[in-house]
Each structure stands twice: as structure tokens, then as C-alpha cells.
Length: 181
Length: 98
Image 1: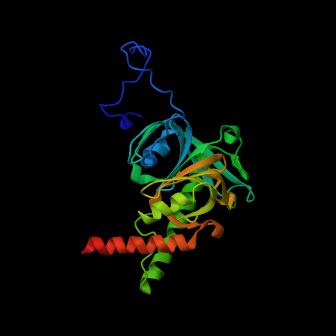
Image 2: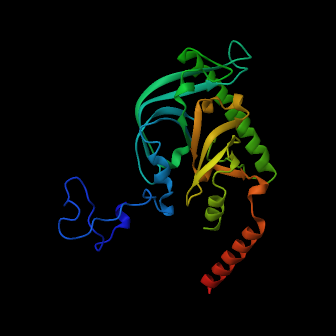
Image 3: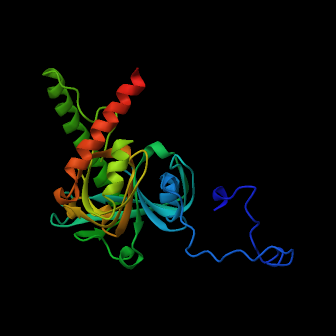
């Protein structure tokens, strides 16, 4: 709102301001419509503004999935999350029941995330938040951690051989140096 | 800025955003900024079973740098207008280069 005002504009009539009409100035016309933000305000900041103090799911560049309450941010999408929990998943096929996936949550506390590491962030629908993701069951943290670790190692090996094969015929792997999961 | 303007014309349309990690997210385009960061509402994930972390999420903010493709509804694109804008942009760029 402030940026639309100039020195020549009449002062705002706040609760503590001069009552309208006292100094001989006619009362200002009531604004016909609510103030709209200018188009250039639809920047990163404006999009993050309405996510503030909401529970978010944050996917990081290294594949981690965090949930937490967004408390602060800036124009680079550097973020501060409160009550952060990391959720780790093991897709169906590697757990005790091959038709079901597993997940576990680990409490992490407060996170300050540098913007460049953010893949995407999503507002969590609180109605669905307590339900486990379809096809997945909650399991012991240690179990999920060890399964996820084994899986990651396996995938890394696969990726490595893929990149090596591609490099041998002159391609540079798409995700070299930046693992996206 | 051409693509920024172009995406602004697609606001409130349903688009599918494919990320560099192969996730495809379909949703209503709600906002886009100068970095082509994208905000989608009412999302659904193609191959939901593979990406369980998005099951409770209703709207997402996607960093522009991780987007691979945006699939657009063909009907929402005004092709003559886009062609015009492209030529104008190219002319502007050529003018600037001189």
C-alpha cells in the first residue's frame, strides 16, 4: 500500500489521525474497491507470503523431504522451518511386505534452508495430514533408515554405471553433480 | 520477459509441470514470477504411488530452475498473439544489440 502514496497525497485517516473535515478539507472519497497489489509484486516473495505460518512439505535437491511450519523467508526463498520432521520413504518392493511401502518420521527441530537447495514446497492439506500416504505404512525409524540407505546405495551404483556407459559414447549425464530424487 | 508474460496469460488454466526429477504434477496455474517459479493449486501427481511425499499436499510452489517441461492446454494458447509477441521481442533484442 505504501508504495502507491506520494508526498502530495492526503494523509491516511487512521484511528489516531485528524478526523475528516476538521481542517476544512473535504472528507476523502471512500475507496470504491480494495487496494490491489501491483502486478510486479507477484514475485517469489508474494507467493511465499501466504504460505507463512502454514505447515509445508519441502523437497530438497538432495532428495530429502521435510515437513515443518514456515516461519520466515526472503526473496531468495531461503526458509526457516519450525518443528521440522524429516520423512523417509521406502517404495514398495524392498520392505517385509513387497506390496506396501514404508515410511518413518524423524524429529529435526528448526531448519534454515538455503534457497538454492529447494526443489519445491507444498502446503499440506491438514485434513489429509494424519492419513498415511496411499500404499505406505508407518514403520520403525531404524528399519526404514537401513532399508532406505541400502536402496540409495543400490541406486547410486546403477546411476554410476549409467553415467559411465553414457560417457563412453560421448554423452554427459543429465544429472551429473546434482542428484535429483 | 516474453515467457514470463506468456505464462501470465495461462494463469487459472490447468497445466502439467514435469520436473527434472521426472515427477509430473498437474494443477491449476495460480502464479508465476520472473524466475518462472510456478505456483500450482489443487494438485494431483501422475504416478502418485512413486511420489508419496506429495499425497497430503494441495498446492505447491515449484522453483523455476527444476522445471523441465510445462505441458499446456493447446486451446489456451493464442498462437498468432504469441507469434506477434515473439517477433516484437526479437525486434527489441535486435534494436538493443545495435
